[in-house]
View 1 (cartoon, rainbow, N blue to C red):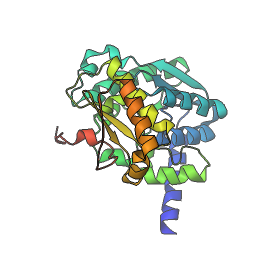
View 2 (cartoon, one colour):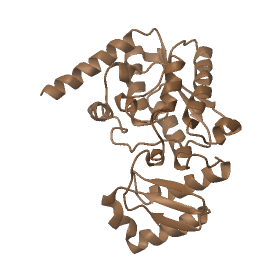
View 3 (cartoon, rainbow, N blue to C red):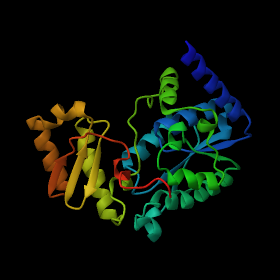
Length: 275
């Protein structure tokens, strides 16, 4: 009961925070966190809460379509902008501060779109867990004074999933989804060709029913990450052959399964966190 009361208090705190805004634009990816924040903001502020989504090759087309349908079904105003990261050499060089560069350029574009709709405040869906990992994009948001209401309310990813389930949001158990650039090792240039290869390869896994999955790009090698519980499923003859064929068709020569399974942020392993 104590944890239930705690999560209830966190939600009440979040509602109070949202009420403090005259209007609010949500940087909306269609993921668990931003979906929850958007729906609650819309419940509190009605038409004074809107969604703004960045469209780009680094964001899977499926996610963009999901975001469009999510807002459409709820009659929430939804603005889509072109974020154009791939035109930024500082981004495509893919240094360890890639996400910082991305968000430093993205948030001003989102704010500009919000201002065109008469909204001066912008929030993103960072949660308490984002304070514990390597998140240069979060640093950019902080520098630009982008609001993080979920953090201000003390909400963790687990809390958000539970509250989303209670609100009957279809995103409550949606697998985490980061941009496709996170599949590429730091120092390897990000190209349109590579991004499309990764997206096509991951679509092959998704089409076969693998929810939490990643295809990590290592030159001609596609390294598949799925939860260990899915190993038997992915290695059954029919699925295995379909995956090999589709991933090779995407442009890879070799297809490998990571025996450690799906690990969020696994490409950050060689980074030091003291920069």
